Length: 90
Image (cartoon, rainbow, N blue to C red; front, side):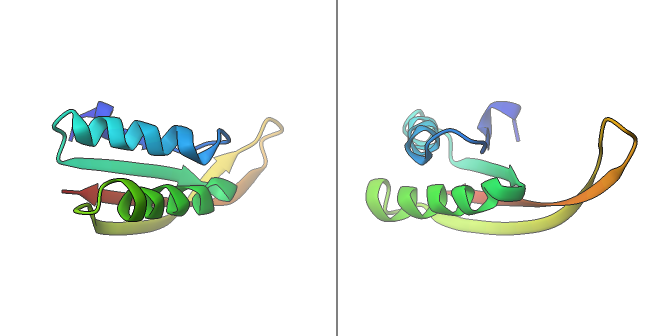
C-alpha cells in the first residue's frame, strides 16, 4: 500500500476529504485508507458513508481497525488517544 492511498482526516470540512477519496478512486486506485484520531474519528466515518452512499456506490468497507495511541505532550505527560483506520475498496 503506497503512502498516497492514505487520507488523514483532520479538522477540514468533510467534503474536502470526500473529494480526496473520490479523486483517488477515479484515478484508478482500488483501495483507499482513511486514518483519524480523537475527535476526527466521527468525521472519518462520515467521509466513508458519504463516499459509499452518494458518490461511488460500488465501494465497500473492507475493514475497520481501531486502536489506542499514546501521545506524549510537551510537559512529558502522556495521554491515550483513540484511532481508527477505515479501508475502502472497489
